[in-house]
Amino acid sequence: MSGHSKWSSIKHKKGAADAKRGKIFTKIIKEISVAARLGGGDIDANPRLRTAILKAKSVNMPKDNMERAIKKGTGDLEGVDYIELIYEGYGPGGVALIIETLTDNKNRTAADVRSTLTKNGGNLGESGSVSYLFQRKGVIIFDGDKYSEEEIFESALDAGADDVSTEDDSIEVITSPEDFHSVVDALEAAGFGNRSAELALVPDSTVTLSMEKTAKAIRLIEKIEDYDDVQSVSTNLEIPDGFDPDTEY
Image (cartoon, rainbow, N blue to C red):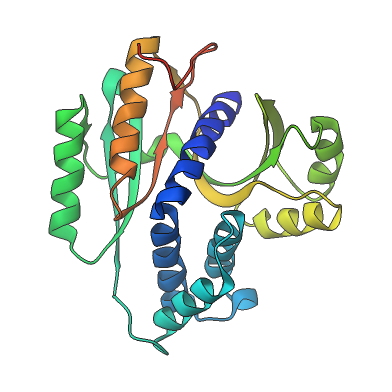
């Protein structure tokens, strides 16, 4: 999972920039509303909503924002009815991409995704063309400057985690979707505060590209993620050793 750890680290750095622009709040509010609409507003009885709330807390979203989003989802406040759409495709070098969206205008979203892929060395694929390369997993990230892998390892595995790995300043705990919340709770109870916790698509294997093509693939992913309709982009891109996202290749 080391490649995924590197990717998570880069996404974390970008996520901090997104939070300053307010983009990440917009995306999480959509997810909270949809989760509440589909499964009700009780966090304990709605795993998807609980996961969305975990993500909201990780970026310090105010409690009032979360509560309003839940009420919009349950119909207590007027809200937008979002549609969930998933696009599959390829980026530079043939890396696989899965783009998960929530939108109130599927024609706009489809056009934006297709255009961005085409203009940046990628292309849209058929449904099922790359999804078989990924599995839905719980991904819990801890700050490697605060904790060591050895500290996390025993508690995580005792709680039912599948894997623990370290990359740069991140310790990544991987779980099954079913064990995700129990592992999060166990690690919090043991005194380990996470940087982020989410259900994500994790690749079974990764693809390594040249520095130049890696940079192009990351630029494409960033452009796609900049759309408010896009919730997440998953990839099987392996970040090469020594790659610096701030360097022009």
